[in-house]
Length: 453
Image 1 (cartoon, helix red, strand yellow):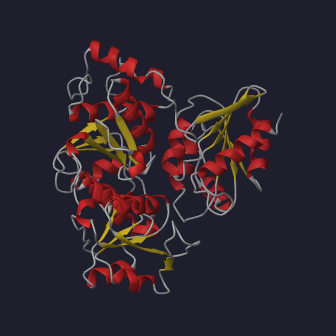
Image 2: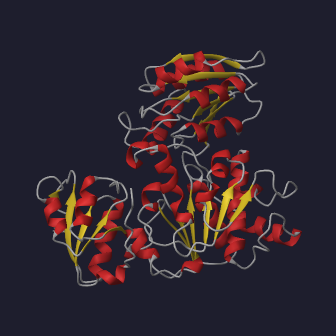
Image 3: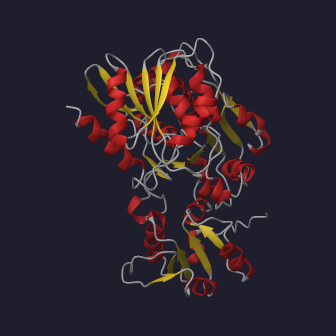
């Protein structure tokens, strides 16, 4: 279905009547931005919880949509799918529907902006990129899907560079692209929002080919990305985990796993393509002097929470929180981050119907001892696929067991992983239902580890 992406900027909304549709984090930032422009806000949400800053909030299905139709423009939160019928109705009424990030990007100095997207790995890559820029002596805002929206007045504007993480939801609202875009991975996700897997791929990668795009720095180890190279814009540079094999400048980052080595290389290549001083030539190979400067810039990095984060060691067993892994791809990468280690893997959560056959195949192919502990709601379905997958004679898969809750899984994993194994929470499923979000799930994991004494 054709998608309208009006190229409006925040400046165009000065003094206008503007609908703010969705009052999450981005919606509140949009409201603060509109206040600086003298705009008249009209607030609408599917399930409002009361007035915001003295403004009433209308219900979308009860007068809210009609109020939005009377606006000059509507700024929607990314969580509102662009494929909802209300968006088509607003477009038919001549009301442009846009997003805050797209409004900001339309008038930003895009030569100093890096957009980072991908199914998984984009947050780590964004945070590493921002850390390197700061380590090289420049001011950098890391924002978008991570941190603060760059258009929020509370974020400030005195920066040399912006590293903007873009979700598939946000990508559908971008009317243009910076010259350099980084893509960390591709895997089916958010299919209900996008309406199908191929539409998800098109939406996720659309930031690579909007007006202004010149180069996409992409994960060259992803078969899916290579199959969809036509969606990656006018020029692609592929980055592999095997590039620069003798380089260890990223060691101070302290990030485990080959995928994180590739994420660091994507960050470096992107900054080189942007012309950030001190990075070196935009190629897969660097001089030793560049490695030394990058190594110094990498020092002091603080890994993001719930991304292969060690939360404790008890009885010789290491407990690792990878709660942000909400589909198969990052869970397989998490297993790969501990080669040869005995792993009790905790998986399962909200069941959105994704295919777990690739997870079953990856577990069957792992040679080191591996025991799988599943959680509701998707746990039984995961167990069934694992048990149905053929396991080679060399497989280290020791079994699969359903657990009633996270605490029980942690206790069972601890008992099995001794004396020197890993209990890995990498759920391959969202946290909805039982937990507020992945952070809440990660905190519950840490509490369960603490309860072991």
